[in-house]
Image (cartoon, rainbow, N blue to C red; front, side, top):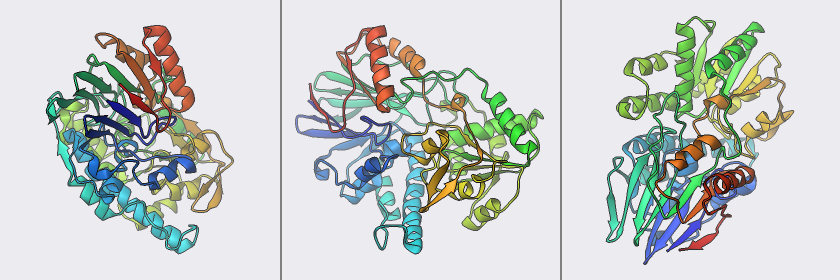
Length: 451
């Protein structure tokens, strides 16, 4: 049995693990690399294995760093099953089509404005590639064992984090492997706590927050202060935000603040039609999360939905006070870039970061208080106040990850720490070894391990 770390090794994106046993090949996750240019270039490389030799893909969840390479895999000729939960299936339909649309739009924009080295600029994949990938999705309910072949089966276990997110338990050749996926928080505002892990011979665990603890601050109090301080100066709060999970949490908080009289009645714009579709998906899977139908209804009425590009331009031309929530969450693309160009140069405004910012992304540069960020080929000065809230994170911190691991009945023979920046992954490795006394290591990109 061989496990190859094709992604999420030495970085927090590009989740891909190739498992091979007795002529069978299974890919766990199929994510996009994000962040620094050397990482993004990996998305353009051909798969390191013959695509027609792949028997199945199993997804932990729908975030693009776990699912966003699927259209490229379909473009390369993959036509096998892609297993995931029904919630992940619903979200992939939204996210992959949007990702392909953005790829095409950004390539066209680069061609028109001449800031690409290639002419015409090409998208990584097209809308047709995304549609081809979506036809491969095969939904599987939580906690149901699915046979891949004689002697090989898997099941999906609730992991919290976002709608449909799962850990993957694989029984293969008499051994059990567990891939944690992204583990949610036990007291998340939206998602239910992750299920305790089953026993496994080999464990692959994420380490996004492997070197830090989340602040115990109340996010409602923090958001209230940011809004009040910005609105006092007539400013605009721009929030780069993931459409899945984070947008719903943020709008849930804004609805609560408005209903409780803790927030001024200023315009709130959600410049992400995709986030509205995501909220509808949460309605279809009420048992997976903590929100009621009435709370989801409040979310839908907490902001004005900005649907067209022209409407988005109109919002960018407005004066404050107001709140603009737009994708993407790490400012790697999407409509938020145009709002950042419009509002980042003004010190009356605030850029509010409410999620993890991977190294090399614009969001990470903003979080590090860079004096300027490059958008569409030009440098935009950042004079707006920058505030980062990690109290809204949907990832377990290192204490929560250790608590989750303590629920495992028996120690794995080996634990691999992945899906984290090098410092975070190594910090979690050390804590697992010192606290739980489990054999543990941090794999490197393209490392192959034989069992």
